[in-house]
Length: 424
Image (cartoon, rainbow, N blue to C red; front, side):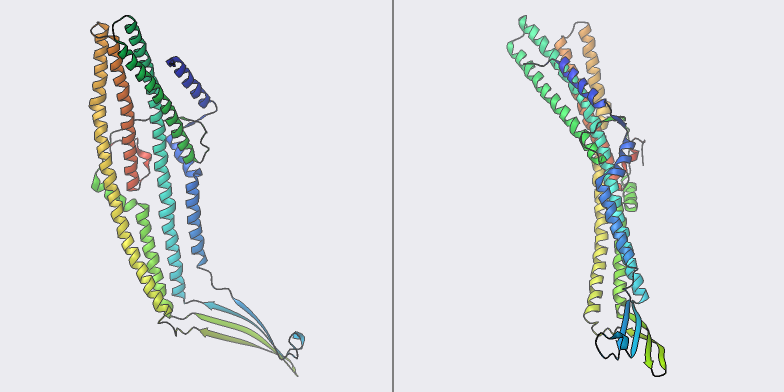
């Protein structure tokens, strides 16, 4: 059983009409703005950064003060009213000021590192993903349109083959081959519809919306030639990459912890202020008492020395991690650059040779058909080649824009300027 293309087209129009009812227009800029506002992953990253900021704020706090209330000279345990002497005191422990400051600096630098390596990196990842998802949906939308045209041409080809077979011009095998090609293209059309639905749902997930929310994609999938210099991109990446900049704060945090560990030999001090009231024969006698308590680092060979060795190892680890991430950044830029160069060459061939040649071939076939030099079946065959090349062009264009977006991401830039001109 064969489904006429008119029914396929009517079904497609019905779907598109249903989607466009109450559907809002969505540009790339709108999608990026909504994603950076509502994406759950970004909310998680923001919460992680805020939690680290709160931990840094806690380092300003001193240990809780202690309030002392003491009764002496009582005839019984709970006979407070018959005491001879009462003492009301307040004590506070204070760390050495420089040690206190270094601990706060370590926590603050760690919070800054989380901001860059978690929150900012997540923002860039979302910007890249929404750009790729938007372009993928645009490409799938145009591929669906070409697939419908392909099915229509295949149906015409099959009908013509059937007519020629009835006239005795071609064997039954040619009709069967045309039938198989037609049914296969109907199957591919169904796949194209499903692929477009998946692409649209992926946009919704990145926007923090339900998968079935309908949008009308307002932008187009355009080709803008661009060229880049690898050395310039590498220098930009070393300056812009958030994860690499975060290692600077991680290194400073480790250095501050190391300094605080070295200062742990300096003792913390506790001061005590108390007011004493002594009941005598001449009446209550009131006096003040002030005291200071210093910690003695008698066991410094264990705890303090262990802290110094530990923080020194952490500092060396942070230095090695910084160099490791630097090399990884350069490698990612180099890989993304090579991938972009390859897709740019493919796009140039498609734009300058393959696509124009196919269009010229179709024009020549059309002229030959008009003067009776080729059959209609030959013309349909050329038209099918043009459509297949059109689908290949869209896939190549998406790969080109995808490679450019990934190159921008490797450098540490948001892919917001994909529609700009050449960049060096």
